[in-house]
Image 1 (cartoon, rainbow, N blue to C red):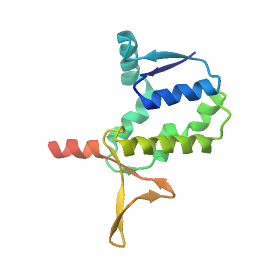
Image 2 (image 1 turned 30 degrees about the vertical axis):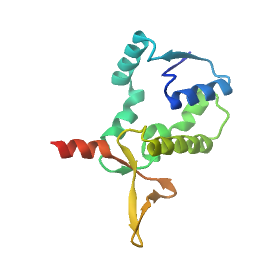
Image 3 (image 1 turned 180 degrees about the vertical axis):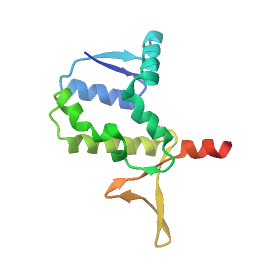
Image 4 (image 1 turned 90 degrees about the vertical axis):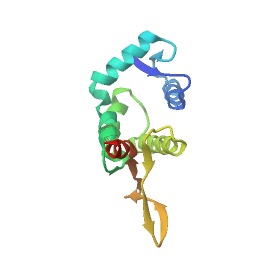
Length: 146
């Protein structure tokens, strides 16, 4: 059975569970803020499971990136087949992109900001082939502190 590690305080976790319920996908909900055992399980997975490699790589990105640069985002098709989700990859990618962009706007995607460019003397949000471009500010801060 699918295990979902999350928290009732996390809007992304709440939306994830809503979508699983809406698509009648069974899962075991493990609230890491209510269970020390659940938190330890999650941290062990986060540190060792290859599923989290993309998130770790995103943190290492020194340059600008789009969501398409992340392997997990590109592999949406496989997830749809595995969990028998009846949405197109384009629909899922659009929703994930919207959610990520909202998280960046709200500041909940720590250290990630929208990339900007100067056009006609004005600062504008940067896009690449209609995809939003982001910048990992965490690495810039860490390098500046050294």
